[in-house]
Image 1: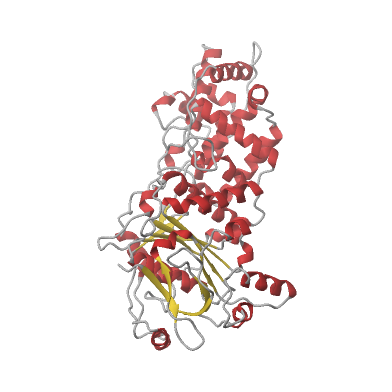
Image 2 (image 1 turned 90 degrees about the vertical axis):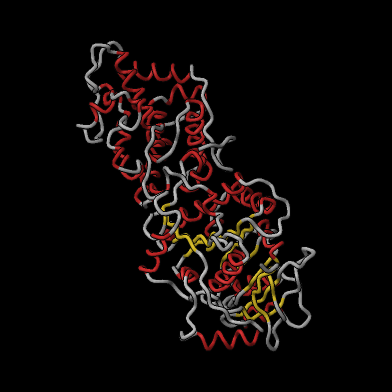
Length: 537
């Protein structure tokens, strides 16, 4: 295994060999340039080089092009002559080979499903995903705190919707203990969750949750696995895309131990379309990203942001990116020119050329580059011919993708969703028990429906992860069969309250459940960096 990854170089007016040192690859990096200038190829060759050096990679495939890394380039292909000429110019011996890959997909269509739990996502990232106001975010934090104190596992969206319903019904008591909870805020959060469900995001939440170790594997030959997230459909929900990748990055930060300065990274993470992470992001979120970028390198993880313009990345984050590849930028307006000049000023000047002028003149497959040297100092900016990829340039076929997925060691681990007992089932069981306690003579199994908890079940389709969710209390022994009898016939429809006596069944139930809440010691459900203080699955 080499100590550096050859990126490019050679030729008249160009630099000699430009290399990314493996020992400094966890110092993060930037790949920037206008559309069609070669960013995807640069991403591919870096992933190939890291994989060959035994470093696992995680990247998102926005257009499907990067999937070609799974197949060796074609010596008889139409680009072979151009690749051979480029290789000769830069002093490279052209070697076509495939890299080991594992395909992932939030929707489970073009790769293994990827899931996390609502609890692990945490209120801050979930608020960002739902586009909540500051007041609504405060209410969501209260809901998560109630889940902590009451020992209610928030696994999927059905759990969160059921707990929101309960909090809305008991807003007066919760306000006295945690702060103001209004029906309007609860309703706004519920509407945002429905919108999220309609986008297909419910598939992201549930179990089995992704094990981070499955992203950090090597094959039998010692090559790092290139984990490719299918993101062509995911880009239709850009906020979901950015939030998921940020969650994954924060989970890596939370979970991995300190390793100092390793000889090579434990994982390199490419964040494509990075501007989506920072668009309209609150200051608190940008500060968290800066913190992760600053500290995660000591955990052996390198983060590379891929975007059209360096100006898309805040200066506080940009300052952490030591390895840079800048493809062409065009200046059609005064604002474009200002952005180009700013990008040029982020490099160490090369006395042989004007950096801003060269950036405008670069052709496809050319870039200006600056990599950290052995002392950790950014190198002088150089004009570089990027090397040809070893894998296929362009996507593989659907049949080839399906064959790789079928042969993957991850096959079968995540495909079948689980729906163990969690907040939705526990609340339904408590509602049924409280109803029976309020009216012992009424034990026909319909008490839970009278309280209204089961209205959350009308949201239980995608969020409940499978057919096992047809009855709110059907998924665990805690239900004792009490809530399932009356609700199966109602098919998840909203319950109507019946005439009540002695102060009302609803009042009796609310009093019973709130009393239990106050008397419970509670345990903490863990979340990621942007959740609360503790973590566990």
